[in-house]
Length: 183
Image (cartoon, rainbow, N blue to C red):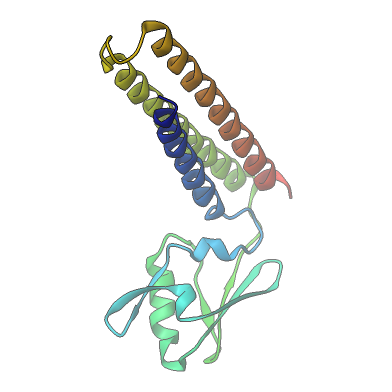
């Protein structure tokens, strides 16, 4: 019976990992190479992650620099960044592409915090859905396989797991919000 709890624990962990990855793509006033994680470049007809067509560095706190491994890729990389949701216009000097992150306004910071909370709430809903699925599967176990007390114990364990992951999400939201609001 414990192996079923492990399955739901894994699903909840994946939800947390997905939320953390989402949070990494939200910029907090500083240059963070993870904002480029979802940018795909047309590399000889194949959509390729930007990290695989050039070297990404952060020479200053608010600048991301991309040095393509092939000079002719500059235009394609620029086009991919423009088409993405990064929200920054790239500039190039023929050798490297630079993304200069402007200081975030107070209004923009508040919008980003709202976005963080929304993503956190979606993750909580996903965790609760996993709990519901678990409880449903426990109830479906036949009375011959497992006693009602054991079903109750499994449901209690699942609830404790759910509470722990919800608390983790709350602390992730708090952490990211603080990072965004720090000027």
